[in-house]
Length: 64
Image (tube, rainbow, N blue to C red; front, top):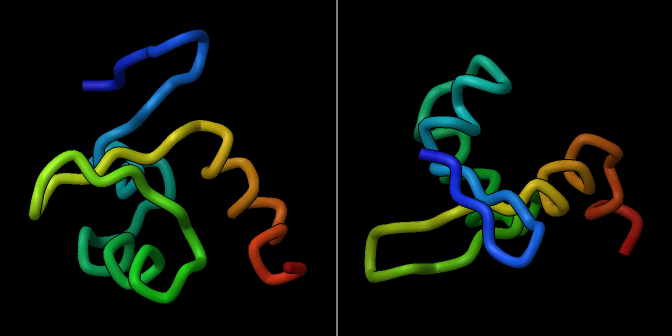
């Protein structure tokens, strides 16, 4: 259920899983470790922006 807000695309954890062919727990671990930033919608719901996913793929999070 990708959504778009102000020309930025946001993806659900499951969509990120599908993109990288990993489990939901792997995506959660990336978020908890600070490797992949997420926007918290509620206590247990997160969305991932396309910009943050691109930074993750390029390895920019490790360069900070």
